Image (tube, rainbow, N blue to C red; front, side, top):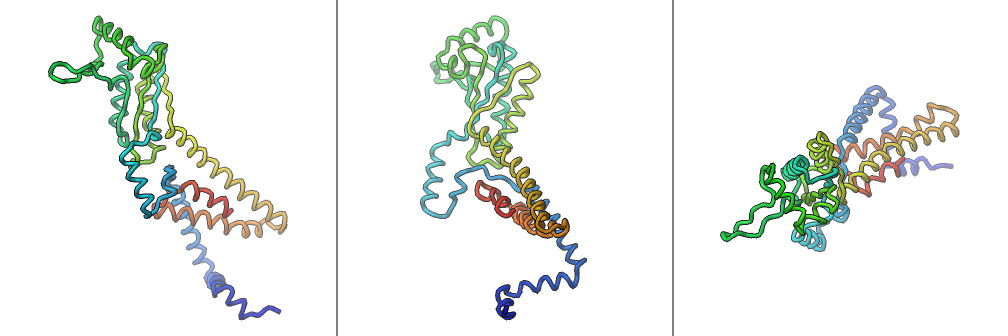
Length: 287
């Protein structure tokens, strides 16, 4: 025989909320739908935290020392390589386009510095001035021929920033460690800026580096989270239907996990919290 008092103590009185909802079903239906809508909007605005180091963020002295060392020495894992490809990248047209891409990327918010063949300087003159190897604008005619001969003989250009077959130019953009926007968005902007100048003249653009790989991984995670959670929810409804033989009961049994996921992730979006590699598995665990 079940002790009713023990049963009430086990629920801490929270089971009485069901009676309140049953007393005013329409009111609580409106409240539930409103909260669900706010949760859906919160899911839409929640951001992904793609910084692995943030998983270990704390107020401990060890983490503060790690931040100090990271600030002293720039992280190479935030470097993005922009590779420009053409049959001959040293033609004047391609050099002008590459120089424009170099300047546009340098002016992007979130880019700390940019290195390429246009960064290199001549040896200092008598007054100690370092003139750039590539003048602005790129010269034409005989001056361009002399510039090209200098580039082809320069030991720090050929085989380093320009491939030996003269088909590729490498531009390296160092991103800020803590940019105002996400690294994924910054990588997308860099690629768009490069293609805006390269595509009209038939120059190909490729991106490489840890941020680019991270961007592909985070995009795949976003897509897989939506696909697999949807499949998991449908499978849950199907299993409930097979056991209960009632579609209405199956929806009632599957709705609470769905609402819990939407409310949890939506609350993170509203409060400004970001999804990381650990919290990313929350929806799958709840479902």
